[in-house]
Amino acid sequence: MTAVPARVAGVSEIIAVCPRPEPAVMAAALEAGVTRLFRVGGAHAIAALAYGTGTVPRVDKIVGPGNRYVAEAKARVSGDCAIDFYAGPTEIVIVAGSGRPAWIAADLVAQAEHDPEARSIFITWSRALASRVADSVARQEAGHDIVKRSLGAYGAAIVTRTADEAMALANRIAPEHLVVDREALARRSITAGAVFIGPFTAQAAGDYATGSNHVLPTAGAARFRGGLSAADFVRVMAVQRVTRAGLARLAPTILPLARVEGLRAHAASIDIRLNRAAGQRQR
Image 1 (cartoon, one colour):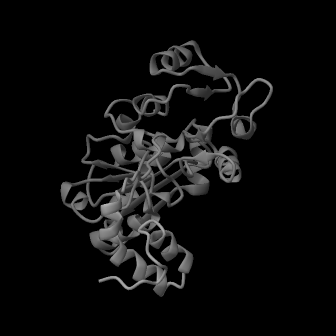
Image 2: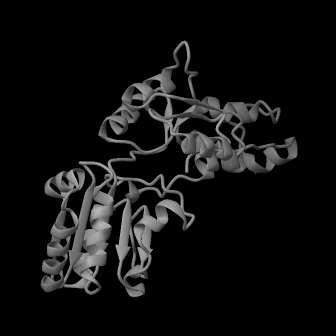
């Protein structure tokens, strides 16, 4: 999910880090176009990538999610090395007024198993549904220590008065994953990293098969951007070419603006190219 868009963008060297790379992970990295893979992880891996070591080369950009230590490390090095965005811990918001409680609970539990600090939030305008989902979560979390810790600290079921209020609250959260139970909710203005519509669009499908990149903004970062894409690995710049005749045509626009700003040297840099005395009136 990080190597493929880099490869599509034409990045020639792709460095990956993983603290415990299983054979399947190494095979996937090879297929995705990873150039080198280092057996290191956590905040120290971010530092190594940002500044370089005797073994790990310095990179131009660090992308990908992680726990709060990785996210904090990325934020700290961002002044010296470009990053994608704040990605982690993971989060899900489910907005539904109806549906199968066990299915909704299963999605909340699935997200919670990522990390003790994962956020799993259910928003509904049906108090009865909230109660049934909470009961189902209690049954499904049994025996899963990480899930219990995550839901106990960061899980929530919120009952609103209306669907409008539920969606307004979801947009304020600007979650990484937003699940809505019907198409009508998805037609509204939405602020989220990725949107999953309908009872069969399980969020886990997005992890593995539905095609959207799964490096997504968290902690409200969806307010200003979406998920990782090839565009994150492309430098965009403006290139301009102007002839003498073209500059003469532009001068009546450039010179008054430069002079109004009090930037006389800017105006002079145009006048000198047109062989005119500085300040000569344009006709």
